Image (cartoon, rainbow over all chains, first blue to last red; front, side, top):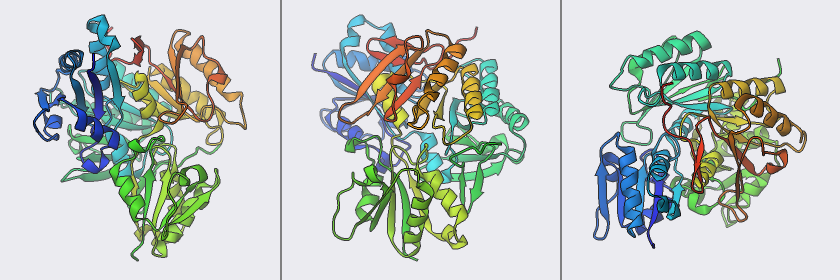
Length: 247
Length: 247
């Protein structure tokens, strides 16, 4: 078999944030596989097939990509941000686990990218400047009780937090419940930042206190960053100091 | 003032992981400021001053960079990985907070990069494929009690974890204590991965159970990734499924 498969992170949107490693893989690919809006970021050309699929079919998409590579294709599965952070890498390994054993012999690699929370953090300053958690708020991925417990553990550990998929269309009220838990655990003065479409046209940043935060400040294109107990403003920036003083 | 300051993430080591945005900033810079080993990754040339400094002087280095930019320099502070993850961005804002008020009017931006945990995660598979924490184990940054509490909260929340600076030369025994806490909280079968010099010559990856893990598997050039309760192997890879099933 001469085929290979790469799961490549396209970063948050700006082509200047795509690594040369990913750009080279895209150049060499015979097949580009991914969620429609990501595939449309790749130019069509002879010898390069574009396979766009719907949202929420990650496992089928991954199995399709593996089958293409097994048939000799040079396949790039495109992912927003970094493939390993709430994106296509885990779906690929779920499909690998469920597929024919010889898929494990394929030439497979994950190519990292700039994930949304780090692009947002850079724009805001350094709100994730010390220990932090990344939490997916999508209600499709875990029971509410698991999510609520994780939020409380992260808050009690005084972690800064980055929230992906803060508002699902399916359950628009969940983010209000998340904010209520955070307010109860972290207090009303804790800083929270909303970063929408970072590095894309219309980028918008907003930092408020938890007392001021409302669910409408987030949508599915927003990444939400919560500070820790020491996170503060300096000039137009928000940052978390590098260290925690002894009490 | 026509000067500017960028804090740029150089990624884990491989030039193919440096974003075009960072490469362009380096091209335009009059001054490159940073920890010695990072500055030496930048070629010397006429019109570009290289300012290398020691480890553990991050705040002084940041203040120096701000002063150079205030004097009209086009200054890039180089950082390993992503500047916002246990690197130079937070130090920059600490220096900004402590410095003259007009430094806040400078043209300052943070340029994201590929942070070590995501480069390591990509090489290993997708061990951070669902909710996870990033924790700095350096004993210089917080009291031991704070670290121990954070480890326990993260474990009880069933987060995967990425550990930066797992072993300090100053206190080599701390990582053994960290492993003991993780074993007690997560059980002996939990997978833990050690990734040394990812994307650099001599890269080495190793995944074992917590029962098998020893402190000597890590040093200051190793990033350590702990799985969550569902993290498992498929072929030569390690991954965490995207979702948590209802009990």
